[in-house]
Length: 476
Image (tube, rainbow, N blue to C red; front, top):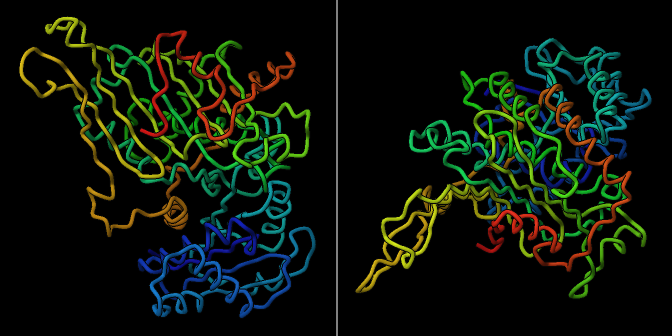
């Protein structure tokens, strides 16, 4: 890893405190932040470098498991931190930041701020000559709230940076198991010949959370589950599952194939859309209470049935589901293969099929259900058993699977854009999403209520039952 300076705008914010700073400390401990690399926090908060180091010390101890009395690594990490008081819309701090920049090293600028400040920061970086041809900027979602605003945002960034310098970060793509989707698909002869509509009955993608929207109520009431989760996180998972093999494992080759998936998505029929809103239960507030709007029509739950118009996936449905205040926190992809065309064992043996389940959280791993004979005397009765590989067991309990932000931030420093979204990819996703949103808004649809800590509204289950299918359980 080469020497770098990483400037975090919004360096005292919640994202920096919970994710960015802990991720960098872990990479420092792994030897990937060599001296004299620096992390420079920049924010409006009035403090000096020593006060910022104290702030970061508290954050690291809160979010990283450091053995008692083993603070030497933390103190060494803090020694490589600096801080500047900076106003994104004024001139305060920019001359100081300019003077801190060192030559002959990678410069990366992390926009850990709201999208409303992206243009100001981009202009200031250009005005103060802080970037070079190989400098990188990192922007967090949301990348707009519709196609028009996404195009505006892309134009703002393109006015000051080459596309090769822009890293649109989606932390889901940094998860170890998400990256393993490509390894499973393209590294195993076992799966790729079967990865099509001839052998796969359907695919389910679920991202379930137990938390509500309290604390994010202003943002979430404007976004909803569709903009917050489906348009980006679930869309990216769908792309990795459905895309064609790229010619090479290189950024543009991978992103070209993902873009083809998005452009192949059919419009979604209204009766293939289920929107829900959690109600109060077990002493927790309802969605409408959390956002302070007793007439809110914003969804906290989404389920969709999608189709791709291409040769590989024609006729194979993709069912997407995400929601707040669900039964458990669980994110997984289930690939359900078709039944054997003919059972030689007779109806009493039962009908069975193979399923490949990729668990993204909380316990990352991969399970393949296979059919065997049920133990016991007499008759041939079949049962399904899992070939189970949890990462903790396969790699050892003490092994450390890097957090998504650890991987992605280091990819920024390396200049590897494979796991980051390209401008045309973002715009294609919004071009598919916008008509769905306009449709339910024009119809005046109201999200269906569902009890907190359940599997969502009844309509989600009916979406699959109409096709003779069932959602796979969140607890399994």
